[in-house]
Every structure is written in structure tokens, then in C-alpha cells.
Length: 62
Image (cartoon, rainbow, N blue to C red; front, side, top):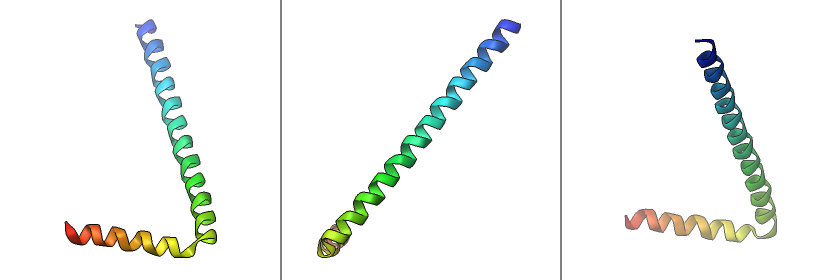
């Protein structure tokens, strides 16, 4: 019984580590997208409006 309890604890710990790593990766990706988005908006503010217009047309067609 002690062995299975220790094994369960190790697997739980590994699962928690994987979940934490995924959260960190997700957070870093979001920060990178935000920085890239800010740089893109500063460089070409017109391109943003075109992208929104195209998305609106696709939604209207559906």
C-alpha cells in the first residue's frame, strides 16, 4: 500500500508540473502575441482595420 501511495504522489506531482509548464507557456505566448500586436499596430494602423473588415465579411457570408 505504501508503494502505491508513493507512486500516486509522484504521478500527481508530475501532472502538476506539466500543468504548470503549460500555463507558463500559454502565458508567455500571450505576452509575445501582445508585443507583436502592439508593434504591428504602431507600424501599420490601417492594416488592423482591413483585417477586421475581412473577418466581418466572412461572418456575414455564413
